[in-house]
Image (cartoon, rainbow, N blue to C red; front, side, top):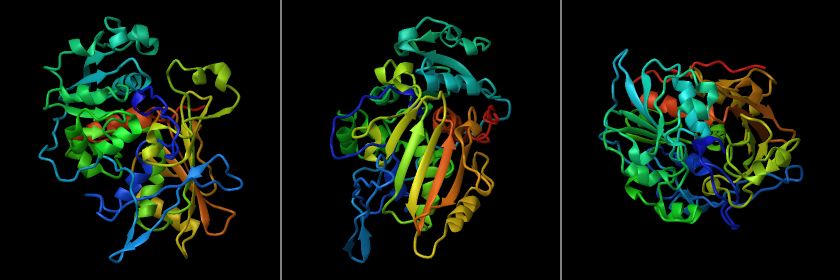
Length: 422
């Protein structure tokens, strides 16, 4: 997964299934965005159709409880249970915001640096990379050698005295303790998965160890920008979504909130480009010329959404294909119109016209999410396809978008790169 730049270990086999981010539980939470209703819970089972044997999905089970349907929830995402006292920082025009990038030697850290090269107000003051400490950033990533950047340092040697905000691009499991030790006045966007689950017991179940900073878990705001913009604007700490949750939630959240699709029989087939990491499964000879399924039973985000994830031999890009059952009387055209009206005026989420299918090559290098809706040949069902660049909208670009909001800047600042084509 591109989001967070972390190198994730696989979890052992179990009944959870595979997934990414906090996708489906966030969907149920969005039905009441301030707090999870006490009756909400969700039970998930794999769903495999005759022609979709490799995919997984959801089966919803409801039981009556004082007139309300009951959903069994296994986990919930970090989201504000109250309005925090942290007020939006209003950065004046031309005023520099001093930035620290922790974990700058990973793909997401490097992508932050690339994006900030065109940001008029974010200036990189500190860059950390423990294994590359003392090196020039341009020697690690020669494509960014033209940038005037500080040398890489170990986190223990980083000086935050003149820093205003932090992008934390460290591996999951390490981020929570580091953020806990940072000065409290800093604005922080965390690109790992450490702060995405509110329930620390659920975190321990899925990640194999207890959470080391539970107070941060309660404070963090989930950073799906187009959906939680107001909460992000007032946050001190944002848990940036990963690429899979972003590409899935942007189409599904509005449709579920509007009750245009059923919560049962949602099937998601998602594919991403390869990531950095010395693993046999990432070698060219292992993955070239095909599609590689991974994390089938134990991907770290199975706590949130059940689906089949695959890696393709491409450097960037993510495509999520969602097969949904529509509510009675609803058509695929209704789904399209609702998404179109929801994202009308949004700069980075676009509905394509007619029968045009979204392709990852149309969003490479950009912060865009392109999507479209198609009628399924099975009556009462529809197919939704969304594409993003997993390193931009799926991680670093959305992180910059979120910090722009947190600093009181227009959220598109430094993000108006057009896609690279061909």
